Structures are given as structure tokens and as C-alpha cells.
Length: 150
Image 1 (cartoon, one colour):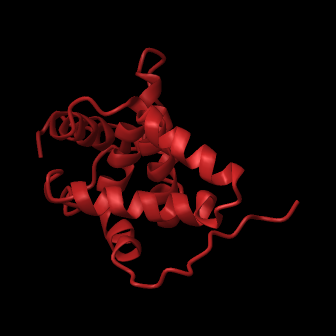
Image 2: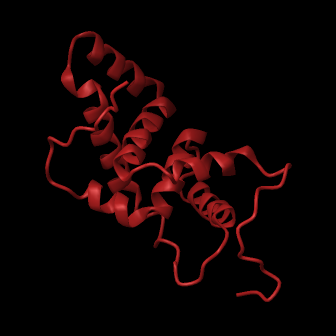
């Protein structure tokens, strides 16, 4: 670790990028929510896929809801995770924001042309790789995201 690198908790600077703060929020989501978000982000990056899902939902296709988004996110993650490299080491603690910035740059280089939402969710998935891989590799297809009441 660099002797000048301070790893204590610190609030973000006023001029820090907003995308980093979004990333900090995303990192607080459960792995299944990250994958469902990745599924939606993937669709939003591709107008044809968005149109297809909207049409399916209009015609009552059940996979057009959250389970379908989760499955889309799982497929997208499984297709890209090897290109994103190994998860970052957790042996030395560091600033969450600094780790986000490093991982985000790596993801942007590995997936050129991806939209902002996909890059954010992919970065969160990279940083939460153990949880996300466990969910993405599960064989059960009847996992339903719980929607809190109220």
C-alpha cells in the first residue's frame, strides 16, 4: 500500500463524480437485485430488446417481469464475467469510492459501448462477485424477487 494512501472512511468531496455515489448505493443491494438491475440496464441499452419486453408484457408473457429481468441479468453476467477479469483483492482495505473508480474504469475498457446503467451495474457485480456468481450460477428457475409490502 502506498504510504500516502489514506484508507480511513471519508465523505466524498463535493466535486467527486455522481456516478461513484450511485455505485456506493448499488453496492448496498442484494445480489439478485443487482442481477435484475443488470437485466433491465441491458435491455435499456438496446432499444430492440426493450421493445420486445414491452410487447411481451403487453401480451401477458410472465417472464417480462422481475423474474425475466433476473434471468436476463444472469445471462448477461455469465456472458461477460470472464472478460471483466478477476474480482479485486480484499486483502487490503481501501476506500469504497476508490475501489469503485478503479473497477468502473476496468469495466468500461472491457465492455466498450455499454450504456451508463449497464456499466454501473456491471461494476457493482464485479465488486460483489462472490454473491453475484452464486446467484447467476444457481440452476433453480423459480427464484422470485420479493417485493416488500407497503
